[in-house]
Image (cartoon, rainbow, N blue to C red; front, side, top):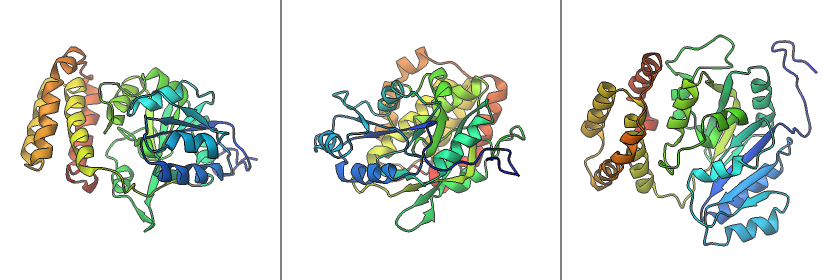
Length: 310
């Protein structure tokens, strides 16, 4: 069946185009809730779970309660690289990421695949995020919806300079071509580097308002540890890909604006300790892409979703 406005086929029932990938660590109850919701999706997607060395019985519970899902047990905490491991097992053209505390709304995976099917240079579509149990929009949605970047008119929504792994469907080919998530970053804002490299290769990223992911934030998350990793990785990304003057300006802005506390100090110490490998791998982007990155940086300075607090 073809929709009159879009020319895209509309389908019901199972959909074999997308595999869902999750990583998890010591969040058994929350993961099991998410897997139960994914199991009930009308698309019936294959699901791959990478258990990052949980010690709370997560892997055993998944194997027992969800035997139809693929469970990977690397034996150590790989962080975001657990997604790379999972994608090695993906056999579908698209891969949908979510976290152990996020899940896709019924029909969104099918619609994401429809959007990607007819746009061969579109690498990824990022969904609207609804915070549960309140049912309110995540603050980052406004940032996505109001992206300052321009793009071709065939994009399904605003052009993006990055994506959110908890709420994005990617073209499997593009993910592999971009090298997946960089092992040096481990976890925390790891999407920015991969997104930059995809843009450099000529891929496009877009926000799609019609897609929805639900997020019920884990009670087990450590916001301070996440802030340390996020700030560290922001600094590393800056020096891996930004030209010298923008990198200096970005670093100076962060020094002036992040909270002056122990967490920020730890982040800067860890970032400095990693400079040898960062500078060895440094590969600044060309001027056209730097212009886009600078536009995003300016727009994010007032975003409530980009504050290094917690």
